[in-house]
Every structure is written in structure tokens, then in C-alpha cells.
Amino acid sequence: MSKNKPVLIAVFPLITNVISILLFLSTVAHTQEPQKYYADPTWPQTLPNNWKVGGITGLAIDANNNIWVLNRPNDLSDMELLNEVSPPIAQCCIRPPSMIHLDQIGNVIGSFNAPQGHGMDVDENGFVYIGQDTVRKYDPQTGMVIAEIARTAERENGGPVGLLPPVEFTPGKGTLEHASVFMPNSPDDPIEIAARTAAAKVFREKYPPDTPVIVGGLEEIRIVETDREVYIADNYLGGRVLVFDLDSFEFKRGWGAYGKSLEMISIDDADHEYTPNGPMPKDFAGHLTLNISNDGLVYAADRNANRIHVTTKQGEFLDEFILAPSTGGGGSTGGVAFSSDPEQRFLYISDRMNNKIWFLNRENGEVVGELGHMGEGGGEFFGLHMIAVDSQGNIYTGEVDSFRVQRFVPANSARGALLQQLAEIQ
Image (cartoon, rainbow, N blue to C red; front, side, top):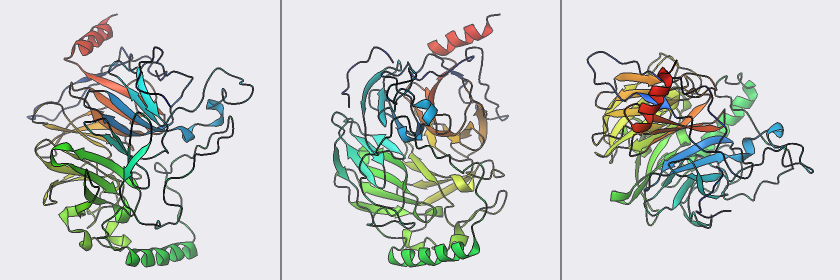
């Protein structure tokens, strides 16, 4: 574990052939255009200690405009861990801490090794909140758990609950399991499906939709300091928006799709199913993420149904934005971020299936641009998962399949202007 001290050697070996790439945002006529961006090949710097990150499962910008990166070190495969065997047979690599803190230059300024998780945020005092089987608040200096939100003592699909002991590492042996989101598995045996359905019914009767604690896994965490509240996307029953007091971690309120109260969420899987280009399901379909705008609106992205629901902080439903409705598999509406202008005129949506960032007019959900496509070169994405925007308008992305973070700088910034000049050199 390291404390927040500067590190002289620092980055993810990452972006090549990028300086010549201008990422053009296609725009819709008669709509104000969002900013244009360049991939920044200088960020981040080389990571120290022969670290190589795993899949990125969380990004957050702190009060100092520095970047927190949550990754899954256990994703790394055997051939990526050749420095862990004894004796080492290659110079690289070894597993990094799961939480890595980077400055604006891309240097590592801190880290700690918490259990792997999904979704994170950081408050104005620098405390880190990680989505594991619940939400845990960490001291970034020591990596110690300070508090955690209550959850059920069991999971719907079985498995342990609570902080797990550290993984027993076998030198040189990773534990990568590729996600099935791109190519879903074939249907299970009918007998297995029936047994699983019966077990789910029993569990859901025991823990109804209005259970005021976390029941499923964690998809996203968002802190609203002014209200002293933390918003949670719990993946139980396709997704529930839950709001807790930031200081006491006591439950305050929650809602489902279309702003319906928690008790109105259906426990019938049929009400959560979505077929590409089909009608929208009555309830969230799955992999719910969220973010809250400066003017107090909650944007909940229901990835498996290719849509974003807009509500007030009290859960009053206002609008539904549908994005790339023909997308199957894991869906199009992943992480939610906002443009850095005071009005936050644009939504920035990360799309894991189509591997691009969508730019939407926040007022009406109209698509006004896009950035990127599938690939593993600079400015391309493979498994685009997480997205964050700092106060200067820089976009940070995290990929869960190609294990990297990237930064995209506005074309009208000093760095953007320099990259544009380099791109024009013959």
C-alpha cells in the first residue's frame, strides 16, 4: 500500500499511432454541436513497479481534478504475470493495487489495495466509496474500511456476502474470466431454468422490491455533497435506484423504472425483458447506472434496454431517452457523464457494445455526436465501460476488455490545439 506521494516513474503503456487521429463528432443539423476531442497519447504515464491494470470497473474525479481508477487485478492472465513467477522470466508484469490515484499529468500519486468491485465515487474530503457486495467507505491513506451500507445476508443466486479474504495468488497464475456480454451463452437446460426460477421466486418473496437495504450487486455510486446523500444503482430486479444518507448510511428513498415506487417493481422477469427494436419493458432490464446533474436531475441508464430515464431527485419521472435501440447483448447505454459547461448541455454516454461515446442533447435526448469505434489503437475502444469528465472538459474512459484508461482532450484546449497541429504535419 502506498500513500499519496509523488511517483517519478509512471503509465499504462498504451496509445500508439494516435497523434494523427482526430476523433470527429458527427452532428445533427440545427443542434448546437458538442466539443471535438483528441485522444491524448501522453496520458497516463507509465505505471510504477511493473504494474499492469486489469479491467476498469470504476472512474471518479476528485475535488482536485485528479483521477481515481478502480481496476480488477485478478483479470490478468498468466502471460501478463511473468514477473510474478519465481524466478521471474520476463520484466513484466505484476498485479497492481485495485485503487490507483492519478494526477492531471498521469502520474501515480497514491494507491491502496481493496477487494475488487464495481462502481466508485470519492467525496470532497477524499474518502473513497467502492461498490462491492455493498458500498464501503475507505480511508485512502490506509485503505481501511470506515463504514458500509447495510445489505441482505444472502444473495439471490447464492454465493458469499461480506468482505472476502484476499485472493490466494499463485505466482504467474491469473484468474481472467471473459464476460459473455458480447456473445451471450446459449439457453440453459429447461430443468435448470425451472429450478432457478423457483428459487428466485422464494428469494423475492423473502426480499420484496421495497427492501430498504442493498440486495443485489453494485453497478454505480454517485455522491451529492450538497444534499449529503449517496445514490446507489443496485442490480436487484433489473435495477433499483436507492438513496442513502451520506453521513449515517441510513436508507432514505428509492424508485424503479418510470419513477415507480419500489414496492411497485415487478418480480416477474417477463416485465424486465427487452428485445432489440421492441417495446420498452415496464421495469428496468439490467445493468443500471446513474448520475446526477447540477440542476438536480437523475439520469438512470438502463443499459440492457438501450434507454435513459430522467427523474427528479425524489424519483418523479420526467422523460425517457432511447439510444441505438437495435443494440443487443449488453446494450448501448452504459456510464453517464455530463459536459463541463455550467449548464451541462450534453450527456456523454459510454457504450460497451458499440464501443463509442454518444453525445446527447441533455434537454431532449437527441443524439448530436459520437466518438470512437471498436479497436485497440489510441482513441479506439474494446469494452468501453466507464466514463468521467473533469472540470476542464477532459474525458476519461475505462475499458473492461482491453484493460486500459484513456484521456480525450477538447480540441479548443491548449493541448488539443497542439495535437491538432501535429495531426496536420505531413
